[in-house]
Length: 534
Image (cartoon, rainbow, N blue to C red; front, top):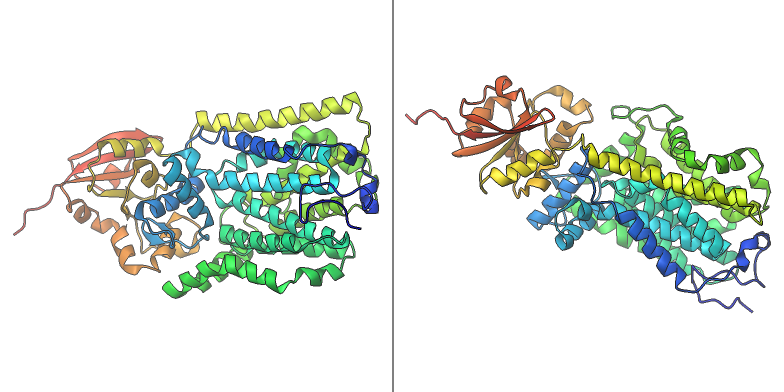
């Protein structure tokens, strides 16, 4: 006789009669909760993550770049091909842009709507972890895990940072948990194919979020976990042909469509932006191997007493043969080691390691039953301190927006007449098209014949790479300095954005009027001064 629970119900506790031995050791399953609790927890997580997402302007370069691409998608109405300044931009796949453009079409072009993709990614990961924990460890443990993850400063800030990292982290988290749920259901003789199909669909979304890493990380974590816990036979069950079909149905159509439209897309997207970027050394943010362990330790400082229990007091031996705990440990170590191998390391890459760390921190309390008043106070104080640190960081970034040209863009929008051309000198200011509501590409003035462009990881290389897929558009958008004066003669009034010293460096016409200067960047209005036609 099977347990009395709905097939593939992720939030229903395992039947007491049919619990495996590892569940029988958990004293928290006796707590009961109503079916409404998961709904309220999910809503609370969403409100918590979204409540302060409006508070600060977009930060450069990442938020400005990716939201700018989404704005171009919305403004042009071309939703299939992402573009950067009108040029096909294939650094990343389109899921972030689709979500962001759809959000801005509903809620308006504002920073809160522009952060819908990371918010949804964080919410998906947190809810998936909560439901998985509730299913396999009980409601009390699930509540603690939800709190530990939601208030973790790295998770809270990442959920409000408009790039692909949290979106793919949420898809990765949900994929791993759905696949693990399928494995545990197999062992309990419960229906598992819905969970497995969900894992395959989520892996496909992960690929659309940030490329092959969205499927590679869940696959690697599951492989290491199954091998480490001697569940070899489950590997073949996970290689399910219908599931592969679901995965391809989600992940493949956009890639095939781009290759059909742009020759060389497969090589650029998969070889250059995946494999060469992973093993190469010509990219920014080179960090030592220990960078990510240090980052996780730094952002987990409020939980130092619990980290002490995990590291020193033999936490792993307290509840033997627990596959959920072993999954979380393997997951944490695998992600950290994997992303520590490349020389280029960005803070957001390690976000998929935060959910298992939150689980282990919260679960360490289960070895103290009943909890002493002192440990209850430690838990509350750690949670409050973590939340305060995250909110404090968001408030600081809102008060001191050092990496933004929003003021310049707003001034441009208020003074410019539609149709007047915009030029950018020595830099592409990613957030200007979004804040200034520009509907056409700008002209970017620089030395585009510089051989160093191909060897650096910069905005110039991004535009040059994008231009190779649309050479005629690139010729109009990427303007050499020698063509600047001619470009300024194309319309009675032009608008120029660049470093404050550019007036002298580029010998702008004497009728160039500085409208606004902010943090070393100036907006000029330039009235055409051109030689008379012979």
